[in-house]
Length: 400
Ligand SMILES: Nc1ncnc2c1ncn2[C@@H]1O[C@H](COP(=O)(O)OP(=O)(O)OP(=O)(O)O)[C@@H](O)[C@H]1O
Ligand SMILES: [Mg+2]
Image (cartoon, rainbow, N blue to C red; front, side, top):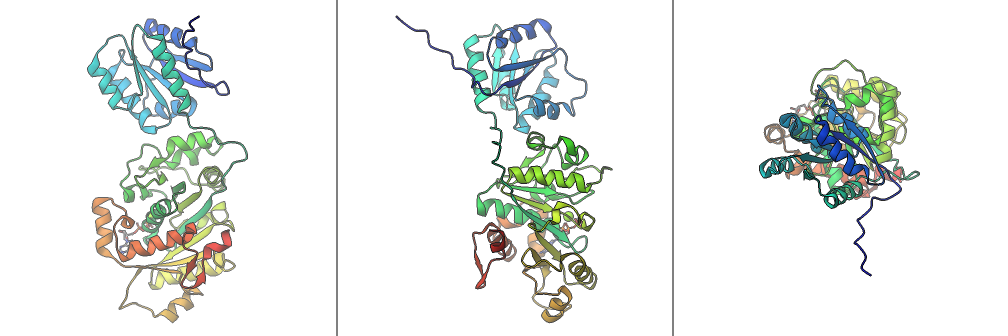
């Protein structure tokens, strides 16, 4: 007796939440009827396209693992929606049309749409597509497998010291040298420029998370994070001025969620010493205090170290940026006296490298130079790849 081939099935343990957006009721009902027969699906039908497209992709991506869009009703709207949903990388996007227009199908596939159905629907094609949608879903982090990622916070003794430059390049080098999941978070308010430094254009920003701390979880985070070609994940600052302050509560929540997910979390804290009571500066965090050799910068660094960081040993790393080999304002002994200890790292002053970054949006660490060598050494030490530095035990040893 011959057996009909069994259609592949969606794993039982998870429900696939599907949004079906179809202003044309007749076509929508055809699609809804075809997918409703599949087990393990929860389908929500939308009978119109919401008027505001701005927040829609983010809202859909937070709630639905798969979205199916009617491309005939309002082709331009459907294309814009599909494009931003696909860009978030979070949702499995499918589309359907009553016409077998190859050009249109190719256009949508180029935007990132994974499946394109034409009516009348082929039930086997739909089944296989739903199985693919189900199996490519990001697996939820299993309970008890939280990472408790290590935290590296870059703080400036004054604005303009080079915090964003160093945090961004350190994070890129850390992601590459360690091959571990690494997130760079931009708290350099009001207009942080981490994304600009890395040549990233991001659609969403950290502002959403800071405004809604109660809603911050892995799902929301995945819709806000942008990916750099180095493998680094980036939670960028907003590109517009906005009123929301990063409160201690919001920052703490964000750190908790991100450290559950990533092995390493690097923060550009700008000069936000007002967040000293937040978890940014908890004992296990490594604080990189970035300063320059100038009267005002050294004086502020001195006050900060004495007031906030005096009890820290290896977990305070003092970084002198734009270090000059000659013509410095102070000698080594004077600098050590002002900083109450010797600096851990000296980053050379390199105008050409800084200009190249501005012009090409290529991080400094991607091009070999004395700056990139020092930053890579910092990152390797932090990642535990270098366990010895100058014959001494690495500062990182205390984290193990
Ligand atoms: N080592 C360096 N050599 C030369 N130029 C540098 C170096 N580090 C940073 N710069 C330049 O100094 C300027 C300020 O750097 P950056 O934006 O990183 O500072 P910041 O501390 O983040 O400033 P803000 O307080 O505005 O956030 C930038 O133009 C940057 O390219
Ligand atoms: Mg900055």
